[in-house]
Image 1 (tube, helix red, strand yellow):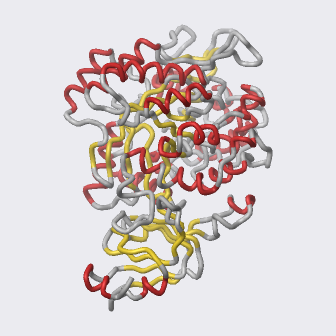
Image 2 (cartoon, rainbow, N blue to C red):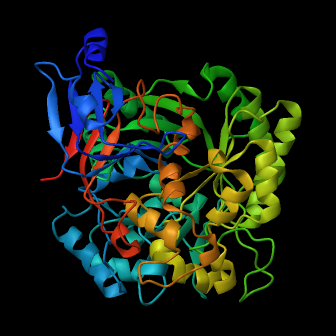
Image 3 (spheres, rainbow, N blue to C red):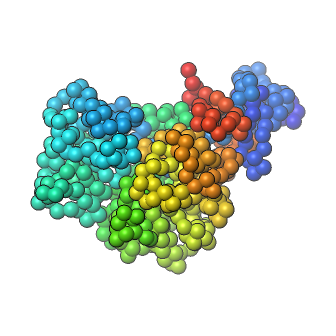
Length: 549
C-alpha cells in the first residue's frame, strides 16, 4: 500500500492500528490495522501501511494489541425481548421457588393493584432446585392483587387472577395445539402450554408505539454490548416489524435485523390453509427483501417443543416413558401445506425442530415443496436441529437446507437435557462437529435463542469448543469444534443466513464496517478464559455504538 491510495479514494474517517484483526476472510488471515471511510472498510493490512492513508481529520485509535473480530451475528435470537429488561420480572440467578416468588412479590409491591405483572423468559426446570414450574396458588400468594404471567418458552405460568380474566376454568377445553395443565382434581394449575398461552397473552395491554420504539433501541444497545452487530430475529410479529421500520427510517437502528416473520404474531398459525395462501398472495413482497439494516429472511413455523422442557418430538420414546415421544404442534399434512404455499409465493421457510422426529417432519415438508418448486439455492432453515441424526444431515445438505443451532442450550441446561432424554442423547445434542463434517460451514450458523439462553457469544463459543457446561461437566467431547470454526459460525457463515455474505461477516475492503474489539485474544487465551472475554468497543457501519466504561 502507498499514501496514494488515500488520495485516490478519499481519506478514511477512522483508523484502528496496532491490533490483532481476525478478518474471517476466506483465508482467515490476521491483520494489524484497518481503515474505515463512511460505513465501509476501506483497507486492511499492516499498521505502517494503514497509517499512511490518514488525512488531516482522520481519527486514529491505537488498540495496543487488542483483538478485533468482524461484527458478530446471532442467527437465532428474540431481539425484541431484550427491550423489556426494565419492564418485566427477571429471574437471573434464582435457584429456588422461594427466591422466584420473592422476585414476583418485590415487583408486585411497586406495581399498582390490578396491573399485570409480566416476566422475562426463564427456565425453572433447569434453574430451580425443585425442578418444577410454579403453580397458580404460589403465584397468588406472591401477587394477590395482580394478574401474573411468566413466560417459560412454549409455556406460561399464570395466577388465578389471570385465569379468571381469561375465563379459564376446569371446564375450559384445551385449544388446538395447546394444553391447560390440570391437577389430579381437574383444576387448572396455572401452567399453559403452547396455544393455551394465547388465552392469557391476548389480554395483555399493549405497549404504546413510543414505548415500543424506546424498548427496541434498548434491545439493540444490549446486543451491541456483546459485540453483536447483526441478528436474525427469531419470530417478528407485524407490530414489531413496524417498530423496526420506524427505527430504520429514523436512522436510529444500531443492530442490523433480518426478520423471521410470524404473520399471525405466533409460531403456530391459526389460519386455514386458504387464509394462509390469501395472506401470501396479497402481501406483495417475498422473503430476502430489504436492505442492509432491515430485511425479511423468511417465515417462521414450529413443529415441536424443546429437549429442555421434555417436549421435543423424538423418533424413540423418552427413557422414563417409552410410549411418550414428545409434542407435535402441526400435523404433517398441515405443515406440508404451509411450506408449499409459502414456497409457491417466493417465501423462504425456517422451522423450529428440536427432536429428530421433528426434523424428519421438516425435511419431509421441504422435500415435498422442492418437488413443486426447487428450494435448493434458497437456504430454507432447520431452526435448532438439536438432536439431528447423521441421515438427516445428509438430507439437509442435499437440499441446500441450513441448520442454525444454539450450543448455548448446553451452557446452563445440559443437566436438565440429560435428565429428560438421558446422558447418551445429551452427549449428541447440538452435534456441531458432525454437522460441519457432513454439511460444511456454509450451511450452518450459531445463535443463542436469547432470552432462553444467555446472549453472551463467548459463553456459546466456550461451549462449542469445549463441550463443557457452566459447571465444567463435559457432554459429548467428540462434537467439539475449533475456535476458527466457532468464530466463522458467528461471522462469515452466519452472514449467509440473510444472503449478506457479500457485505458483512468478514473484515475486507468494501464490506460494511461492522466490528467488535475484545478484551482478550480469542485465539490465544485458555479455554476457561474464553468465557471471560468482554467487548470493549462495537462499531456498526463505521460508527461506535458501544464502548465499555
